[in-house]
Length: 458
Image 1 (tube, rainbow, N blue to C red):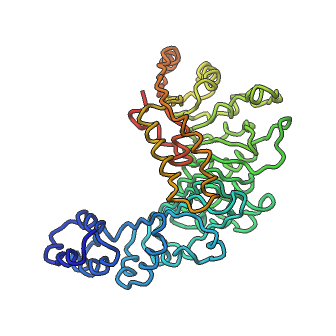
Image 2: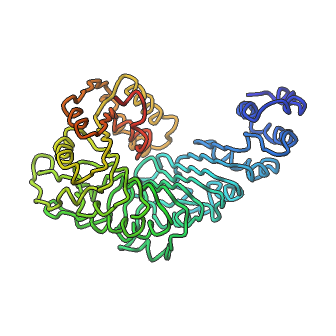
Image 3: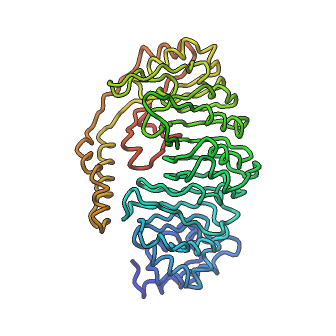
């Protein structure tokens, strides 16, 4: 931290010689009470560009209340809000906040009229997992907003319709939502928000650990004019799924086909329904423009039994109706269960996916570096200084118990035989050695570019 007398040394004649990047470094060492003085000085530096220290605001953990208070009541800093481009806000959920609709500084975010990137993340909460939660967004969002992420780091069930303003935003390009649920009866989200009319600029949508009906999905996908990438890494909201009943996904794929089927280029799919695997009904083959597909093998070929005990019913889902015909890149895994499916695909490549040029094969792997990352992450999450209630400590017990299993597993199979088959069919084989636990701890739903990490790919 800079002392008060040190901050006074930062005279305008010295600051005017520094770049915006260096000014950002200086402000990172300043105390909060010194920022107004520094802001008054920086206004005279550039007539055509604002210093970089104005562009990004990061608020983490327990500092959120004090920072929002300062931003709201300090005149010099309030002027800074109008130049802010990016806000990264992360905080723990508080029970007292449930009844405060205008809480958490949302009125401060409304003053960020040039905001382009918004990230809001709620950490582990003081309430039970079954408690109902709500997301509180600003009543007015900047027209310049381009990307937005709303995330919870643990189980919640906040109403999906509370994010309607994000789906209706005319200029938003990328939206990622975690742990939302379509409340009420089927189609409730549809009735609450009205028609979309393909009026927004949304290009990428991620629904992670969300629950919704097919009619809700149709409603969400009716907003964008030209959606290009869709991630559904989620539960399905259906209460009538049992071992002897096979849930049909045809209505969900019909919703995708009828709304963005002409523009969709990439789809990541991992569907569960009340804890059971769901194998898609015919419908994926109708997505004629899809080029990138990431899918679990169970969605293409149904397992014969559940956990080795209960036989599952025979499912009539021929593979020729479960693959988009113009797929160029197919990511699938894990390898053990994907191998029979892949052989079937390669044998019928000319018939099923003639444009296929790359297969990304997911294989479990954890080296010393990844194990160390997991250990560090768990120690941070379970630091008793970050948790003030017994409930919060209970919620991390499972992670603590799993810590002992963070052991390296560095056996990298080379897949010579399968690679030879791929080359014979003019297909590039990319083997991704990834750690599902790492993905879950660091960011649920991480994926589209994860295989590009150089040291995890051969």
